[in-house]
Amino acid sequence: PGDYEYHKGATLPHRRRVNWYPKLISREEMSEPLRNSTGSIGTVSNISKYAQEIEAFVSGSRPPSIIATDETIEDPSVFALEKHLEDFLVQNWRHTELGKHYDIYEEDGEIVGQQYPSDSGPIDILAISKDKKIILVVELKKGRIGDVVVGQIQRYMGYVKEELAEKNQEVKGVIIAFEDDAKIHRALSVAPNIDFYTYKIHFELEKK
Image (cartoon, rainbow, N blue to C red; front, top):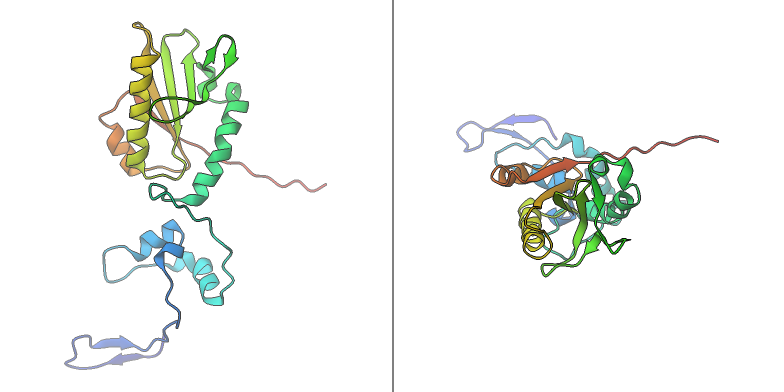
């Protein structure tokens, strides 16, 4: 920005000259956090912590982004990551918190609980408690809008309750996401049979 100027009697008397970037940057090209910050209500938005991303836009060196054609997906990069997370969870199930109390659903001794078919679409992971009293529907958020995920898992749970569960079995749900989500918390405040988990990824380089 340029030097400060004061224009007495003007609608905006306090001014600084600025040089505008000639290219318009679409908000659709921004990361979700930057998009949220630039869209915040108010006269001033602090976007200093996104300096690296903004500099990449200005220099034209921004790497290609993952684009989702599904309007229910708000974070395509997380969607891509969690597609692999599902396989990881299944392969390492017994080492997870859920694996302490549940086994992946089986039919005739064969594990069929991953992408279990239902009339509302495939269930990410279907599990059953070790005492066989609870059937658990596990849904990964996969970068989707929170309201969409809650509605989807409730439909899955309804299917399981009507088509799979026996009279003495309870149906519960678990939503797993990369980060906390206020909308999911609000929706689940009236759905006590659905729990919400977040996960952490540990990445470590070891020099050989």
